[in-house]
Image (cartoon, rainbow, N blue to C red; front, side, top):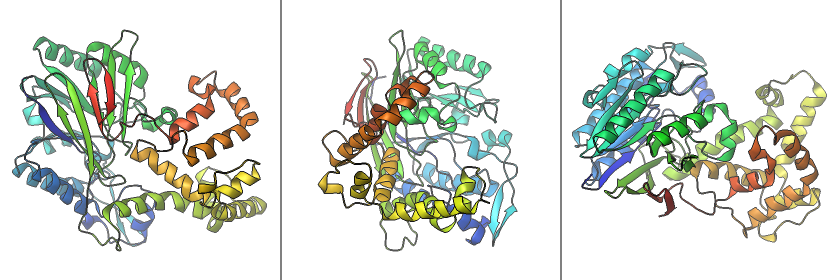
Length: 462
């Protein structure tokens, strides 16, 4: 590698063809369940691609999957039209597909009903996206929808589909792993640096994500060790719609970085620009869609994405007081008990009224005065949103951190029981207070912008 290489990362575009909906009751019901947009996706993608096209210093765009909303054929057609426009601006585009990109039982929305529409078979995807990476493959694994490509002199991309068995297993089956190791070995033999992109995170985006089945590759711990020890130091991922940079170091002293990028069409509407230097240092910078052509009810683009994100969460809390039977149904509980329904409705109303100061008084500790009048629900929603934004802000010395620390201390008798019961199976749960505090604040803020030394496995804030 003789010169620095710039490229963009754009993921989880979830492009949706608006011809498939009349924006009626069924559409709205579906829309409320998503943190990302649906009908707005075309306008968001158009603006994002305008921003990419305007950057003359960067000619490569990498897209790690979930290109369409849910595999509708027409959604793929609309996205391919947008990709063609971006390609005509001079960009070289490399995509992989993921589980939202194939579906033979795709649906549209008419009035209060979901209606069948033409879907996409998985075996159609390579040919559909042939001009966007597959046609330039040094080696193509058509069965696993994966390939390697020469991005520049001395730099190779390993583009990996991780559909697994298209069921509960998300990852790389043994024959695909053998193929991956062969591609890494071939790159090393040629003297090329090789890095990868895949859809699912290969390392948990935060400690809590390791407990969520759909948040990471099924066999992530074993696979990342194998990949790192084989000589793969870097993977770009998506799927979780969150910003994170994580590193794993193996017993042999090798490391693998997972750089997960948020969804383009939902909060925080993130894209990344990466600069890889000949000495294998790398800068990662994040930016967002600044505006898009849609009626946002007077909101900025950022405000609109935040509203969409929080609406999804608040709708579940609203159900406690207005639709308690529906709320219980989320957890599979019976909705026939009138006393239980009344209790859920009562708790929902109290939750909306509760401030941090009142919550502290109920648990007999003192709330920092700067935040005592803030609504507990508002702050909880903000904390959840910060996990997806990355670089969680509430570190030691801040009033929010102090509130949570005191809350955990007050709940210590219960927490000790949980640590004893759960810690034997999950070591990270042996210190629940440390886990919780790590979720609200990070001292090293590299999730959005980072400088990484891929030779010596060091990272710092950019």
